[in-house]
Image (cartoon, rainbow, N blue to C red; front, top):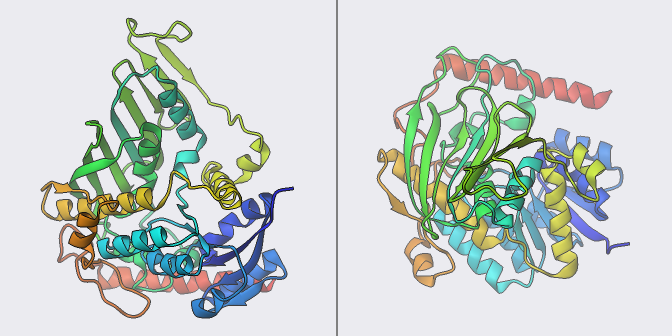
Length: 424
């Protein structure tokens, strides 16, 4: 039996999605922390005996080996730093840092700590993405020179209450101020992981297409997407979107080499298309190879039931393995902060209609010094700090009063429905 790891979870709305994977990998959830009473009660109902906190200062004093940070998207860095300073291992949800200054602080804290930092990025572990990495590692594509990534998560602008209470908690919630370049991890991380390339220069163009003014959503961004391109450290090029919302929902990736290319085919539920030109075809392959990849893992049945195509399970298993064996993970603090830096620099490019920006490398002290005071952010913070930059490519855009009224009404209905369910 592997060593049991004591884990605390900060933010149980998203954090609860990992409960089963943690327990299946011999993790012991000893404490949770959430300021929302209803969400904390839901977690206790599932977990049973567990310490409950609504204050991080008290939570972090609880005896534990590691913390899963699943709090607000833009506020992970400060809590990761506090854990690292106490020697507590950190598994941080995406994104690692919402400002370049936070990225610098996070890297410095991780280098000083004897604890492990890992980004909880799950999309590289989807079955088709693991298969694409396997093919890249096999070498039959030759030198990898181009890749695409698309995380397209459209939503019904007239949707009902649904799960709004699990996604939002008011009109200043981070999702309502999210620029289209910032949630870049699900589209960029899989192609970085598969190819091994690191972006060093970025440019981005906005796609401005606001929802109707009587819709039930109240985002402060009217952008549907940002089309991002990077030049990488191996002279390859990536083209990707971050959190786009055009067309039909899908996650798609394509990697091209000198000799062939591989992609997951849109709308097929994860089928792979692996193709070669006839003069480059390996002896054991066809020119066109179209198939559904298998999971091919000892924990296949557990993976099938985990969220995000099994990705949530792999994130937990690998993190706990790293903690037990005291070894780093590829999704370390440098990988994580590069993703964050791409998102932020792509935003700046988007706001200037495609002006290219270099991506800082936080391994280098000169880059840290350059950006250690760069605190520009489009988000509201828990302490009341207001945004310093707009979240939309059209800075004057704002949701209509009708949108805001519709959204707040549905949010209240959703919260009331969740509370009734909890009482059953």
